Length: 267
Image 1: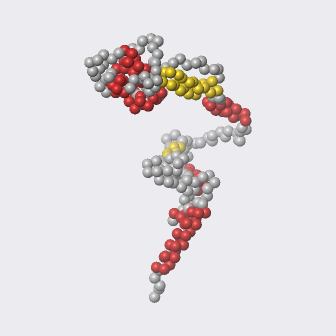
Image 2: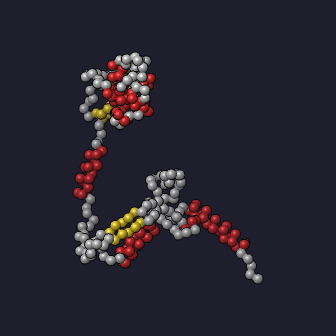
Image 3: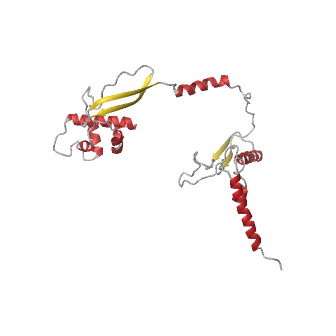
């Protein structure tokens, strides 16, 4: 890769650039050849060259990065901002590293903060799963599947279109029917049971989720695009709060009085 100017770039400067890219890529969690200029600036260690120095290796960031990564760093090379760390005590892990550098980017002092290793969360979950069968008694014996006499070329299909499980609606407020978790459960179970009774016997069934199975996409109770608020029912919710009922009743009463005053008197 040709430099952007006629001045030769010292090998130690190229080594510094490459070391800074490699370390910044490791901190950013990306491959060195994929690290962006912004990631390099955010994650670079305290002592690498400035942005002007790295651009001396090429006309663009991509050229500079490619030129630096192609450079062979001498064996045993250590960047000046990195100093040997003290041995970590047994049973400890590194919590953080604080580095004091001078105006030239050289390391003056470094503090290594450790913490005692706690319980491995992965191993903890595995231990819980291993002990669960012994701690929790089976509620019922496994039921063998029934022997069904049905042709192999039939398939039962249960399409679920916009069930909106979790939606909370009060009929007096919305002008339509009530809806909550209990109603959603009853409707879906009843619909599938009714369809199963009407259709021929099949060995296989396909449940198709056509979208909007749940009323919200996450726990924020908002639509992902516009951030609109949604009424979300809890497991114990059967109707809206008393304040919402009072507002709905007030609106319903006002509307009723309005209709009453506009009703024509029979002749």
